Length: 158
Image (cartoon, rainbow, N blue to C red; front, side, top):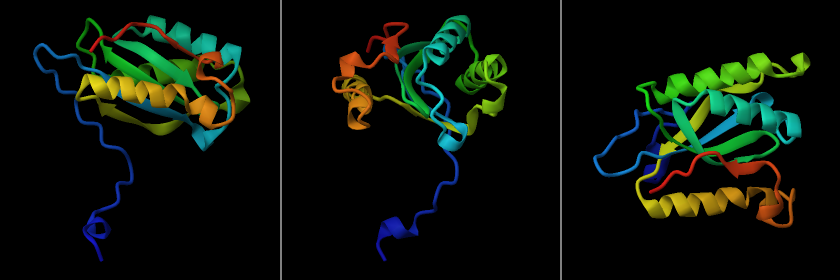
């Protein structure tokens, strides 16, 4: 038995409060999944709805993002208010669920989400390169730049 076998298994993700360090950006890498991992997100209507909600829910800023059929990856940084990340994410997810056009597809989101604070500028670039190529690895696009369900709402600088 090695040390890895002795560690407890995490049943749900931990959500530590982001560390705000002077003269250093606070950027989180986030994954939010559709309930049952159903392929609902890669439509023009879903993409437009999420962009609209993210513009309205501006307490945290969305940087680069990629929609996959059953989940979203994005980078986020605090906006101008003191709203916690957890409250903000629950706000836009509940708004999206309430405004979702197909009632039969609800509930929309898995109960929880994954988030990780980036520690170095290199991590931001490396994570983005990995995320933007997800559609290519999944066989949904031949080139990452051709994937229509991605973008950048706010430039998050490291």
